Image (cartoon, rainbow, N blue to C red):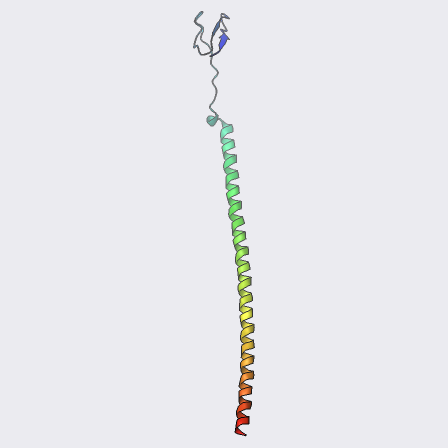
Length: 112
């Protein structure tokens, strides 16, 4: 509680008094707006909401890019495995043909 001067009689009165107890003059009150009722509050809230939405959007986009890159790396690895398997398979087929030729040569030698 603070003391203020009455605008009418000039005597000191409480700042919480609704009227001067000496002269009866009503004490004017400053009518302050509540912050959430002001336009500035809503501008700040809109800006905060916009920033939050942008951050969420960029996080989602970043995660999609990371996932795509990860899938691309996995695809490359799988393609390399398939290529190695094809190479091994073709080598095995050529080795099998060589073995068949050797078997044929052995069969011919054993009949002679």
